[in-house]
Structure formats: structure tokens, C-alpha cells
Length: 392
Image 1 (cartoon, helix red, strand yellow):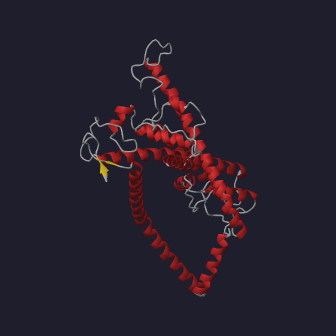
Image 2 (cartoon, rainbow, N blue to C red):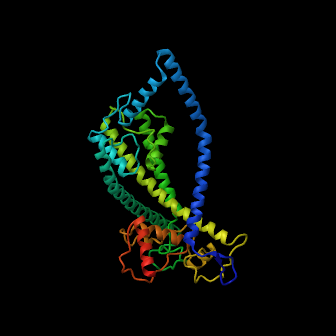
Image 3 (cartoon, rainbow, N blue to C red):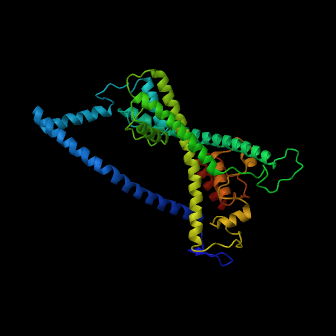
């Protein structure tokens, strides 16, 4: 069901949030189907070749050593059980000494979960449930606060660069004798582009991954491509576990390498997490643009349509620019952005998204119900609870 605007313009969805959610769910499903088709085409032939080679090796082994295939399968199953307990043919570092356990808990709280080391006892599994519950929540909070500070720092740097560019062009006269020609020319109205933030975080992530890959090539004897693959899998906390660093029993300069490995993983996870958050803002902008196009198929929406009553609906991008003076690539004003370094990540992401779309929604209802503030997913939940409690 859709409702038309007063000026007879094209219909708009009644609930923008639900429309965006359904569109995103459909696009993710399509993305999964395409990914499954691509990986199946790339990896399935290799799997079939490996299975055929393995069957031939089993047949040759049973014939040459006069061992029954059933007895060999029994031995292989026993090895799989030993492998799950950390036993390998090649000598590896102890899994459950203090350094090995510290590496394990790091992969737990960071949600990487390589899988090369898992608790085998019932008390260990029970302790992991409660330990991971608190540790993962605390680490996600740490990543959120890191993102808050890294974007604040980038905003300061981009503001400084913009100020120098203004001074060189004569627009930012310190004496104040000249008024800026427009709000965009003034330092007060300047807004850093979300795409610049994404570019800076992307470059930083690539530099960290390339540096870490050089280290892994020399220490782990991996190819550079395998090292880059491991960096992305680890930094994005996917953590397949097919390649895991720092697992041998002995390395040259072992302590320095293990320290460097931990630092690279920590910096990489923080940068990739921040990059994912910024990309999610751009994805939301893209969804808003798609919904606006779907609401007005085949024609451009006139900018004369009234803005009232559209607080939670999709309106044409030209209307946003006309009323709010914001472009789709703008972030929040640096004056508001850098007013306090204590701003929560949830408020930051909300402002980034809404000012890029149509400016922040103003709420005239005082928050006295206890549902306010928070970081990340907690802030989203608090905002929803605050809205529903006010409606009641």
C-alpha cells in the first residue's frame, strides 16, 4: 500500500525502515546465491579431483601394505580425533600452555575463532560459554570506541587540510574582514565526505595487510597470495582456520614474531571493523537512493513537493539537497562532530546516515524513560525502546 504526496507526485512507501530492511534482505539473498554459484564453479572441480586422488591413494596403500580398507579407515578416524585435540604429524607449539591459551582466548573475544584449538573437557566448554559472552561483548564495545576515535581523528585531519586549502585560495581569511561566499566556503559549514573516510581506512587496511603478508611470507613460508588471504580472513574475523599464524614449535626471533603477529592482527581487525561500518553507511545511502527511484519510476520527482509528513519516508535526493543543503556524500558538520570526543558511536552512525540523506530527525520528546544512549547495537535497541515507550 502506498500513499501519494500532496502535489500528485509518485507514491512513497509508508514505512521507510521496513522497505529498506526488505530491500536489503532481498539483496543479501541475491548476493548469497551469486556467491554460492561462483564458489561452486571455482571450487567444485578441485574438490572432485582431490576426492579421486584420495581414493586412488587409499587403494594403492591397501594393496602395497596388505591392509584392509576398514582397518585403515579406523586408523584415520582415530587420527581425526587426535587432530581435534591438537595432535599433528609435524611438531607444533603446545596448545594449552599459557602462551597457547592466551592466543586462544584472543581468537575467542575477537570473534575470529580459527578453530585450530578448542576445549575438549566439559568444564572447559562451559567456561567458554560464559567467558565468550562477556569477552565478545567487551571487545565489540572496544571496536566501537576505536571507530569513534579514529573517525574523530580523521575529521580533524581533513578539517586541517580543508582549512589550509581555504587559506591558500583566500577563502579562509583569519582577519574576518571578508565573509565567505557561501556556507560551503566557510569552515563552519564544511562537512568531510564519507567516501574520503572510506578511502583512508581502505588504504590503511591495505598497508597493514601488505606489511603483515611480507612478515608471514618469511616466517610461515606461505606464498604472498596465501598471506594476503590469511590477513583478510583474520582481520575480518571470518577465521576459517585453514591457515593460522604462529603455530610452529620454533621460529627465528620467536618472541618478536609473536608480538608482531598479535599487533598486526589487532590493528587489522580494528581497521577492517571501522571500514565495514563506514561501508555500511554507504550501503544505506544506496538503499535510500534505490527506494527513491522505485518510488518515482521513469521520472524525476519535482522538488516542489512539501516535506511535511515525510519524516520517516523516502523523498527524492533533490528535495533533500534543497531543504537541508546536504549532499549524499556529506557527513556531519565538523563543528558538531568535534564538539565532544565522548560522542557515542551509535549517535555518530545515526548522524552520518541521516545527514547524508536528509539531516537528523529532531526529537522534541525529552528522554526520561531510561532508554537512551548506548553504543552500537545497544543504542539501536535503546532508541527503539525509547520510541515505543514514548508512543505509549
